[in-house]
Length: 292
Image (tube, rainbow, N blue to C red; front, side):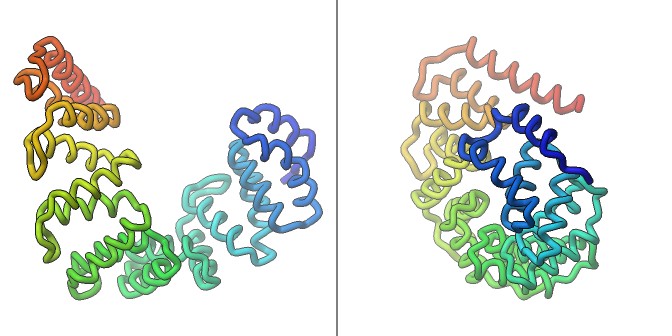
């Protein structure tokens, strides 16, 4: 693999619109330091090449940094093998690299290793190992690991069901900002799951938090609650606001619900034309999805 500076300069010019001012200023120093065997610079250079879609060079520099034992380089290299970026897709190699890096204490590698044990990717399914590594990742505040632990305890995957522990991990993940966990917390309070009493106010709070990250199901649920006045005062205008957001994200049912609000004048003026337009959009979406 030849990494020539003139090619690097050409790529910088071509992709400058994707780079920050700071990255552009530092790029040449990063390139120089990487060639002087500075491991951190090698990782930074690999990151720049990833932005510039030069994946074979991404792998080249991650391999060099990985040989020096750098955990982040090995983790990113594992991602390349898992996704087939710059190398042929190889989940077994990804598994080996995740495992090596997880043992070094890399939190995201621990989470990905656990996922592979859970799903049987590159290794036979092993719930005991999955649980072990999810817990290790959770100790280092990996919110995805906390969320998956919630699922495992709720459903009894490789372990006895434990609603208290499931709720504990869902809550920690949600508090850490993971939108799927925030949606799950909203659903728990909405339906009174895991031994928790129904609390629509708390459900709305959690759905609103997830909606900030554009979580489509949370946005739709908020529209539904306001349309039907479930635990909140009915508000057709608010329902429209949330349904339209969900529609923009691709929710088919939201489009039909918007049409229903306009047809029936739920806290808005009756508007048959708008209703017809939204039903047509729903029909087109369904037709396109069927063709695909």
